[in-house]
Structure formats: structure tokens, C-alpha cells
Image (cartoon, rainbow, N blue to C red):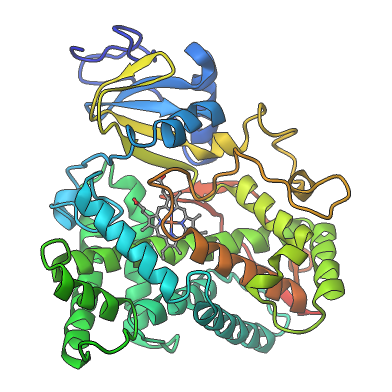
Length: 458
Ligand code: HEM
């Protein structure tokens, strides 16, 4: 296939392009961007796959569950590559680690090791659960001390989820006012916020944040290498990786380890804390649903600490959490590149083409969801509300071989934090104020606009 042209030679159709200017589509900002994307999807063939030229390169836009499943699941290997942005030369020129890595053996090695190791430190196991419960207890103590003063809890939630990740990866637990901790949190937020715009920007802020984190993780790697006793049980993720370097120094290196750690921090803190912010936002908007969650927990669990194994006895609480993830669609879009020449339905997609999958549209696809704009936890429950109903098109962690590597950890954190808060507090909009809007702000993730709530002890 020669140079792609929309609708020619099998390439997906799209708006006309102008020399130098590209497709000239005004996507608008924030939620309007998602609406415009769906509108363009409806305008072109199949209503779900179209192409746009932006910043001199072609991007194929994918909307709705059927087309997303084609890219992420059915042809998961064909589309498991990542685009290479010039901005990445500043912060990860060799595309090391996991998140930015191309689809090759090195990525597979790093991903598979990180996944397995984090599991043995507690992905789904008791030790990690203990760390999460401890953080929740600390958080609830702080909220009790806050009394009925309204609060925007973004930073508080970020600090608690960060401490969980730091304790598993580095064996470090910080006091919230530690300046080093604050610096790390700032870097992690910059990575998360700026990653989205790095497709267009020079990536200067990201490079700075990434260097800040690298400096810290390199210091941690060094001190672990000095204090670790070879052959003894690993104390944390770094120790386990260092043992792997002894075993296979060709695939596992200090340099790769630094990038993997930066990826875990970048991908594993704000994703959880911002989802938790959405849970508080939706619960303050829907007090009746919040009361039903509380009632279910009171009836089944009572006052004791909630454990991960309780999840199947709390179907309404789980369904509410799932509905919040669907409605909010924190990861509203995933970006891939074609690893090989492939097709999406009948369209030809040349190797290397960038493909953006609209996860928000999957979660609001009327072919999959009845009344997708209505907030209704009941859609995840069977008729008598006693069991969860699985929906194929529910993919908050994406899907397929490149789907979220931290899904199990993320799910456990969300469940324990959400249900514990619902047990002990009523989350309320401050008196005299309107409930917070469910409109999102599109950074790398779709985040709530700042809002305040009160945590009233139950
Ligand atoms: C609510 C929490 C989370 C959400 C919604 C979420 C969502 C996602 C999504 C949508 C992707 C992109 C997948 C794709 O391209 O198809 C992803 C990738 C990733 N996530 Fe998560 N994530 C969460 C928590 C975590 C945690 C706790 C960790 C690690 C500690 C983590 C580590 C990663 C990594 C390393 C990748 C890159 C995987 C790869 O490219 O192979 N995530 N996540």
C-alpha cells in the first residue's frame, strides 16, 4: 500500500485532508472530545473506524465494542505495538521498561517478570492485602480527625495509594509530610498528566519528572544491591529483580529495572487514587445508592475489617464499583500501533499505523448497554440482585495481551478502599452546595473536576 489516503486502497475513511494542515478536525476539549469522536464514528463507514491526519501522521480511530474487540482481543498480537513519539527521545529514547516498550521479547520478559513477582509479593495474596488494609485504616483515622470539614481528597488518596506501591517495590513507607515523598508524588502526577499530551508536546515536563523518578529509583537500586544478601528471600520487588539479573544478565539489567520501576509508579498510583475520587463523586451524587451499599456491608460484614475474600458476598457493592468504573471510564482511550500489516473489519491497516481505541465509547455503546447514560449498578446484577453479571464490553483495564499489568492489584485496592469508606462514613456534598458534576477532564486519564465532600461518620 502506498501513502494512506482516507477511504482509498482499503484505508479507513475520514474527513478530507489539506496539505500541511492535515484533517482539520476540531475535537474540542474534555468530554466534547469524546462526543466528537463518536459523532465522526457515526459519520463514516461501519460507524466505528475512521482515519485522521494529525501532526503529519495518520491515526486510525476505533469506536464501540465490536471494533475495540477486533483490535484489542481478536487481533491482539497485530495491534500490540506502541507508537514512537519524538518526545519519548527525551525520557525513554530506547523504549525500555514496559509501558512504552515495543512488542518484542524484551517487553514480554519485563512484563512477565514484573507480573509474576508482584503477584508473589501479594497480587491476590495476604501480605499485599495487609498493606492495603493498613493504609485504609490510616486514611480513615485522618478522615475522622477532619471532622465535618469539606475536603478535596485527591492528595490524601494519592499519598495512601503511593505508600502501598512504594512498600511493595522498595520496602519504603513514607510519612505524608516527608519532602522526598512529596517530590515523588509530584513526579508521578506529572508523568500521568503529561503522558497524554506527549503525543503532541516536546515532553519537557515529562522528561524532568521521569529524570526525578529515575534518580530516586537508581539510588534505591544501589542501596538494595549493597544491603541484599544473595540467596536470601527477597524483601521487595527490587531484591527479586536483582536476583533475576544474577540468573539472566542478558535480559535483565539495572537500566531496565529503573524503567520498570518508573512505569510501576507512573501507572500504578494515580490510576487507583483517581478512580477512588470518582467513587466519592458518584456516591455523593447518588446518596440512595450509597445507603444501599452501606446496608449491604452492614448486613453481611458488620463492623469488622473488609477483606478481599468478602467480595463475592457483596454483589451490590461490587456492582456499584463496576458501574462507577464504566460511567467514569478513567482510561478513556488506549493507544496502540500495528505490529504488522493487518485489517480492522475490511479496512487495511499498514504496519506501524497508530490506532486509538475509545474505551469510553465501549462503555457507552448502546449496542452493549441499555440506557448507557443512566447510572445504574443494577446492570451488573442478575434479576434478584444476588449475583454479578459479567459484560464482555466492560474493559476499564483494557483487554488482551497488552491490557493492564496491575489489574489484580488495582481491583483489590479499589474494593478494599471503597467498601471500607462506605462502612464507616457517609460521603456528602457540603450543605448549600450543588452535587459535583460528572463531567470529566481529559488528561492522560479522564479525571473528575475538583470537588469537595464531607466524610460524616456512620
Ligand atoms: C484502577 C486502576 C488501574 C486502571 C484503570 C488501569 C488501566 C490500564 C490501562 C487501560 C492500560 C493500557 C492497556 C492497553 O494499552 O491496552 C494499563 C496498562 C498498564 N498498567 Fe494499569 N491500570 C490500573 C492500575 C495499575 C496498577 C496498580 C499497576 C501496577 C502496579 C498498573 C500497571 C500497568 C502497566 C505496567 C501497564 C502497561 C502494560 C503493557 O504495556 O504491557 N496499572 N493500565
